[in-house]
Image (cartoon, rainbow, N blue to C red; front, side):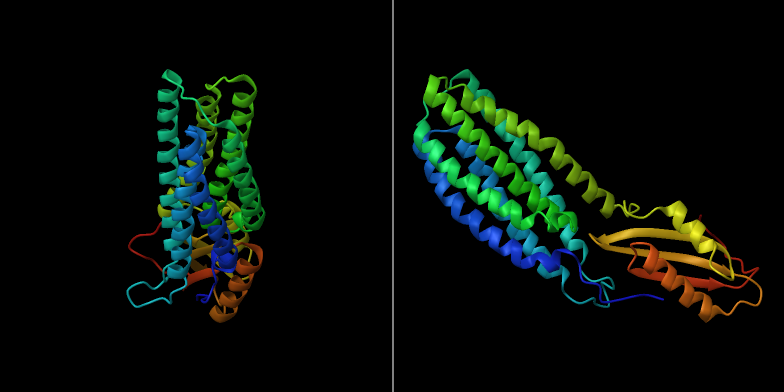
Length: 296
């Protein structure tokens, strides 16, 4: 028995993603011009993040549209996993950009160029406002979808970069110490890496059919066994199709004299009401039924 027609959480937030993409693209153009004019690594590093943001946000939107396509005979679960692939791609790109920033910061430490600090601060201030607005728009949806979390992390990383750029600009303007530019850029790169690593691990876990973090398997198994006329359970599997859409399959062994349809209805109600599982497939077996191979 299965429940169909589930809407992914990311699809519900598509409009917010479009707004943030528009803001990000506009500021990217401003920041590239400002970075070239000021010779600031911090600004150009932020522009690199903004470029990946534009690509990442666009990829997230494409993935959402793709995931909304109806299931086919070849893809019976539809295209939900497109969102997870987008989140994985975003994580990989962000890690690559962060490592590149660290490399560029190292080169700047060897020979720090003079930076036009006033223009740098002004451009970064605009970016800070844009990024804060983007974070506020995406904050709520970031807890509902891994794809949206990836987009939120990208905007968060750029917000932190903008703060670092402003701080570096103020230090250089006041003291003329141009090492501040690569120093803060390196710090921001190091800050971003562990958070992006978490996103990468979550994406890989889903692609490897890992158990959802919000489903307690031991509790699920024990409470199913407490449903009336359920004599046993085996081959219990729970996995994530996409963020907010968990699926489950199980073989249910009935007690003697049990009414299969009643047990099936009771199980369906119990599972969907008490656990975050939206797709269930249950096979009912009579007492003594034996399969050639079973799993836990």
